[in-house]
Length: 289
Image (spheres, rainbow, N blue to C red):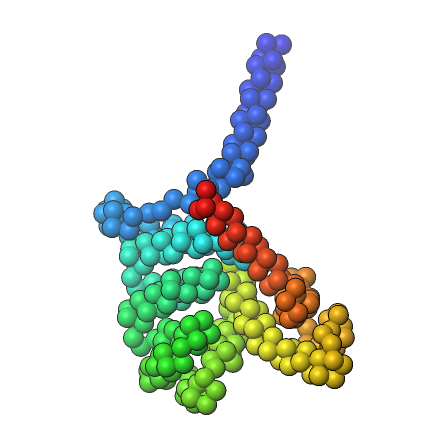
């Protein structure tokens, strides 16, 4: 009888211990504590030659944690991710994928300077890889609105012997229109054709949806302007415009919505914009105290 009582106590204690561990693991405090910032130089010395194994662990940790926030990435999370990625390439400077996908992840976190830095590091380590120069060109065009810089990097990409033939056409497109958006979409389409299901594919698809959305917004704005000219008023609903293309975020529950400023956007993008505005407002209030 005593053994049964002791067994019950042990099982109950183990159960309670596991519940406490789970509560700590999934609490907001635990979530914040997991964002440690490694010092790349000290880490390299500390792993005593096991650079590749340490880089592997940091990469896995970065991917798994960033999967939780990448669609609504805040500045502190983007800064943490950038520090992790820099630690990884410090340990393993010849790991090509970290520069590529790391730059894309920085893009999704709106840390374009971080994205540029990783692509430049990648091109420095792999000058025979035209994609890094191409991605720097698309950043310059789509984010910095710098046609000269975009053209510079696109010409660099096109001059690499292994460059895709259409890179030269992209150079011509930049000269003619000053717009690299179509080239960016084509590049990601080709990437997705050969990518197996993975977290990295999810990141790439998210970036692709955003670029397609940004390419459609000006066309929808033209529809809105034509409606105003024809009726003398702003549209009251999205349905009045008869938009011929679906929201790129439809697979995630998105739909075209009429924003407060009168423009048409995906409901997913609109929600993100509102959330970022709220975060910025809170930060300003904190600094004002």
